[in-house]
Length: 128
Image 1 (tube, rainbow, N blue to C red):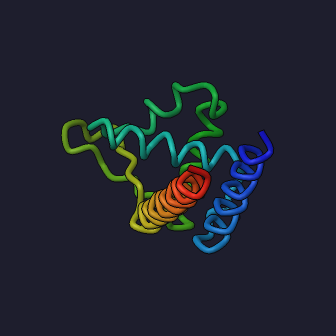
Image 2: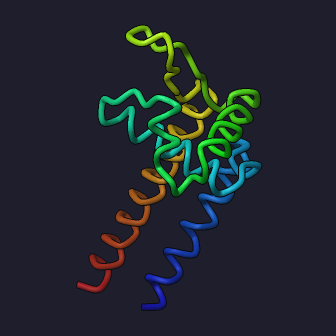
């Protein structure tokens, strides 16, 4: 159990360090969740609109969501573009800044986990 706790602790430290390097640590928890939600939507082939995001009440009221999305756009974390199929709505996309942050997190966590697997395999081999 101690090894498992140690691994989780080191993984949290890694994520904190990556967030600091990418500027992600400057965002409040709800903004981080919004960016993750938008990223997951795009990964599933969806293009969420501001209205669709605002309907998810876990991010707050519609006014709060719009304000938060506007701040994220101004700080370069996302882009809001007119919906080509419906000029009354705007679609929300991750910016290259946020996409690069997520890509970096994924790559560094994957590398960390691969090193952990290699260390575990070596340990098992030493004890057999």
